[in-house]
Image (cartoon, rainbow, N blue to C red; front, side):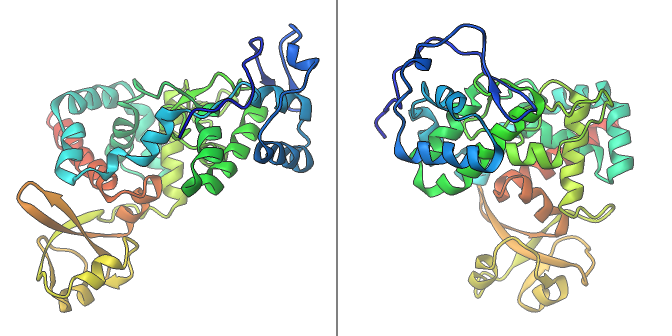
Amino acid sequence: MTERPFVERTAALAAVFLLSGSLAFGEAASAADKKPPVLAPEVEAFIAEMVQKHEFDAKALNRLFGPVRARPAVLKAMSTPGTARPWYEFRKRYIEPGRINTGLAFWRDNAATLERAAREYGIPEEILVATIGVETYYGRHAGAFKVFDSLVTIAFHYPPRAELFRSELEQFLLLARETGLDPAAVRGSYAGAMGIPQFLPSSYRRYAVDFDADGKRDIIRSTADAIGSVANYYKSFGWRTGQAVVVPADADKSGLDALLEAGIKPQLKVSELKARGVVPSVPVDEGAEAALFMVESEAGPRYWLGLNNFYVITRYNRSVNYALTVYELAHELRTRYAQQ
């Protein structure tokens, strides 16, 4: 999509959200105060809604939105997500020595916090470490995109996800007001995810916790808050402590289409899947509910049974490639950590 500014960029503004419900900016007056920016109709409608629903200041929102333009890099990334690659290609990026060794160091450095999160929320340490490892290389790569610009781009220039991301944009503005974040300065992923665990604004507001007890829920700078927040996220989506995540399976390829098209949410018991030609390669509770899925290995299709906890990981990211990567990285980390 052709890059189109909402208005020409005016003097730099340092936007700070106040808990009172209004927006306050730096002391320097902007030229935009004299001549209101001309915004696209859909943006004006969004601003009016924020004013009506949440008592934001209309002039301040106009100044905030004024300089923003569609970001082609964001649109390209949304159209070609990395998780869409074949499993064997996606896996190679994450199940590799550098990420494993850095993950072991991260585990050692945060052992007490991880143990406490596992105890309080019931999520294994290795799942917490692997999730953060896949998301941001253990906090080292949290994203270089301006979150506000990314959200505006998707909300108003990417129709397939526009409705969802207008909601995320609303949540981001509320989050910034609640926490004192500068909405024009926060950086994250091309999709607007933030911090060490890469939470979208709605997830930040709903699931982030103050795990270091400093009075703030800060997943951007606090590793402890990030660990506790990931644990809280998984627990909130129904993680079952002590239960399996996923098991490999053999399958009679004929008649599998309906099972594969049913989706990743577990709906059939393992015993029912076995009756339909799906055989787990390792022992698993036949009364447990599971879903069949397939990924592309270098040798061809590979079948797995995703149990409840695998489905929970896909609530973090809907891609089975992503969830299986988290599981396999976690398994490798647990094995190596026990050998230290």
